[in-house]
Amino acid sequence: MRKIIFSAFIFAGFFLTSIVSCNNADTKKENTTGTTAAISNDSLLKRGEYLIHVGGCDHCHTPKKMGPNGPEPDMDNRFAGYPADRPFGKIDSNLIKNGKIVFSGDLLAAAGPWGVSFGANISGDDTGLGTWTLDQFKKAFQEGKWKGMDGSRTLLPPMPWQDFKAMTNDDVAAIFAFLKASKPIKNIEPAPKQLSEL
Image (cartoon, rainbow, N blue to C red; front, top):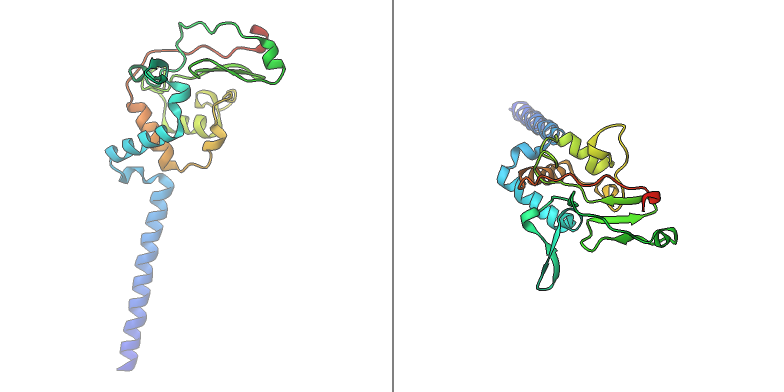
């Protein structure tokens, strides 16, 4: 009798261990492929909105308008980037040569030793991220590749792509989902300028 009970316990132990192992294997498989499929679209968008807010994406990608307390994001043109028809203006290149970094008044352009860079259109329009894939976004966002393409130039400062390397796949997917779902704004930001063009 004791042998039967002991054998039953051993069998139950192996059975439970195999179930837990299978569940862990399934969970690991699900995590490597991205658990975002299990998250509702609404939750994904809310998470993306939150991460974009705390990450300050509007600072460099959304034009500003004057409000009662100074410049504030123009939410009608959210994520449009530096307006294509706005002249950048002249800056004193001696400031740059002396190690200074100069920002435009609305933070959509920055000049430094790399030249001048302009905030990109990251709205849901085809001139923004509308045609991008998640893999392309990850490559730009976490590897600093322009347009998310292998062999392309590195994204210029002040884009802090190096800081985003440690983000989880789920968080990157949430940010991308929110940007793709954002109001499409047609705008092609200016190409970067060399210091010699200033």
